Amino acid sequence: MPELPELERYRKLAERALARPVVAVDAHDAWILKRGLDAGTVTAALCGRRFTAARRHGKLLVLDADGGAPSLGLRFGMAGRLLVDDVDGVGALQHAPSAIERRWDRFALSFADGGHLRLQDPRRLGGVELDPDEGRLGADALAITERQLASALAGSAVALKARLMDQHRIAGVGNLIADEVLWRAGLSPVRASASLDAGEVRVLHRSLRSSLRLLLRRGGAHTGDLNPERRRGGHCPRDGTVLVRATVGGRTTWWCARHQH
Image (tube, rainbow, N blue to C red; front, side, top):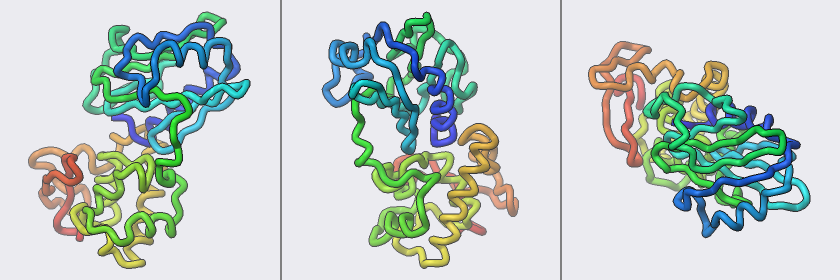
């Protein structure tokens, strides 16, 4: 499932699409077009344009266009892939088909040189927008400051993991990253967000930054040390305790009751 590390790889791959004139848009799947967008509008906006920059804000990929044209926003849901000239952005995705099949193409751009940019999404949980509202997103998880993190947690009785995954508060943290970060920080995912003291916020901030850097180097959110044990009978890699399983923020969650408090 694409989280921040996967989106960063998509961003780097999308740089291959820069400065190449768009000559055709395939937006046949109306479900994937969001905020009232239709095929005619996106085609008229992008045909004849070139992308000038590829940016990432959390789990949103943004391609800026020249000539004052709207930017293109791509979201990948739980199983979306980006391909540019048939190059896959990440390879394997956990809980997603390993195959790449044209029937899963939901949106595509053709360039004047014969190349393509394609969004594949077997589960159709992603989306395509023009001029996505980045103001609705919180600070990017890779750049968030300790003060911003403390503000995102303050005054909330919501479970800590749920708050970390709230994209309006902190952009880029998904299910796997949240479990890894909290495991490394020694914090329980079910604690009230506002219950953390200043020292615990500092520990969480350090864990968030260091975990993301590690996962970026390794190549994906699924490469964390906890992930192989996120299963029935799985054990804490730190102390061997059988992991606890529960649903937090609507997502399956695993943690160690011995060292996560």
